[in-house]
Length: 273
Length: 241
Image 1 (spheres, rainbow over the protein chains, first blue to last red):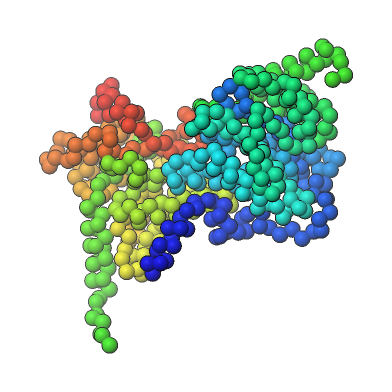
Image 2: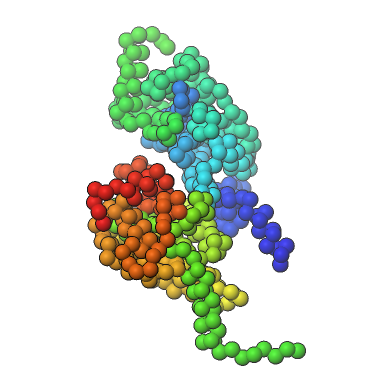
């Protein structure tokens, strides 16, 4: 009996919500559902696929932006999808890959952070959050090998170092801290080229929003799976910033102004690119 | 072989209840009160880190008196229950009534079947859109559950505290007034039998905001009141209670 009581101490080391689900309600975890179709790479045509996310640091914080398109093979599955979410008060998460699994991962990650905060009475460190997310991405590895991969981008304000930081991941759970800026998803190569030219140290928040919208515009210009600003339906990218005051969603009217400026300046220039 | 003495069930239950009551009576008091701004939770607690009040879910809070290890494990179990439920259904499907009823079952089962009952008393509070939609569920060591209106006082000297609080309580108080009324009643100002001298450092105070989306842009209504804010709450005099 005393041994059993002492073992409870070791079990208390993990206050993880996803571990709790795995032990007591495994059916609720998307990564545990078995998919027995052959590895055909048919995933992208089976289920909606979320595309480009860009993230960049600015003076005193970090920003993340995503376009509004999801595709299924060559069909546009959604023009309204949102792919950037606040994870908690000081971090945001953007997702690229199979949308259904990615949205589920986001929801699970949000509960994971809130659960920890409530049980422990303190917030998890930014590195701790990045490590938890990496572990959750790794659990999805069997599905990723069948073509249903999820690749998140994670950014947050480090309250002990007082700076914005960003992390990228791979399907095996690799976690990489990125400097200055990064991008994931199908249009990421084009967005990254754009970010390299537009990003400068110590941008203010408004210029950072401008750079993000422009990078997404460049991605949409060359990648058919990334949606540009939709002036007909008035759909603008989703942009979140994180600084010492917490996460903030940039309001649509600000994004509309920025997006219209980008379009206007490019039409006035009247050049190919 | 030793022969077990016969003890009547009535006697057994009475002994257990007396035992639990004694444990709870030794503890310091906790007050939960529903007012215009939301629900205020006030506890006499000298420790800034070993909490008696806690957040369970968006609009639900937990308050307890008794043995720390026992109510702490119940608090954690409550958070797990709420988070699993909210994750598998939807956030709005997590209710204080559901949580209170599983707590009641668990407390009741331990009271009758285990060698020792829980020496705890709990309140599960849920803030509604209007004061009339607030829920305060009081749970006692034997698993009985009561749906209280207005305010709940638990712990040692509860009756004396209730007496003082009844004179100053109304549903129209704002948070500073409600917290002042609670602290006055914990000190037992204006009644016979002096209570403890309570400063901000020996109090634990938290609130459930009625409209957190508007006030702070979040769905989480629970907020701890730190010592600086508590000092201004206790000393502001614009509306004496």
